[in-house]
Length: 227
Image (cartoon, rainbow, N blue to C red; front, side, top):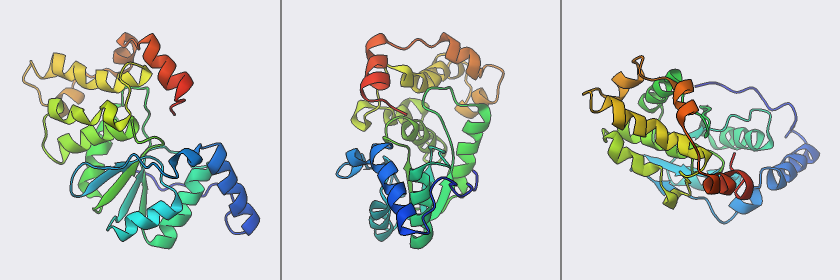
């Protein structure tokens, strides 16, 4: 969990700077695709997962009781983060930055950090990446397991096509992470947390063994251009 610096490239203190940020956000961050589609799903009575919200959407979520916004993208020098940080400050929302990637096996520190995150934030909360499909997906698995007590097998339902997650491409490495636990850790009687903290958990080695499907990779990397 980090407190992000101000975005140096987008000064929102002037009308010109704000317009520049919105223009970049609209086109370079593909925000026009998210004006009428938020890919929003309440996965419990205290946590909703979405794609990158517009400032006016954050206001709507605040009106629905959301207290904390979790940004999974990083992007501290990007237009989306400048606008999000500004909106959260104006609305009185707590903004938490917890960067995670969609094409890597998460490090041990990331997994343990996610557990701490879900134990300490103020709820109700909103959690987002860019599309609400992959990074929001793996974090939703960890939330359902660590906070709601679901088994990994049950929680993996958060990595599903109905959330626009495509497991056949490079983003399938997220599914593979949990599949390895079900193949190695669970049969050995280990909890997921014990497995992650054991020498069996080897993110570089696991990624090296993962193989993405060609068609799925074409979809996520070329057509959808997932972040």
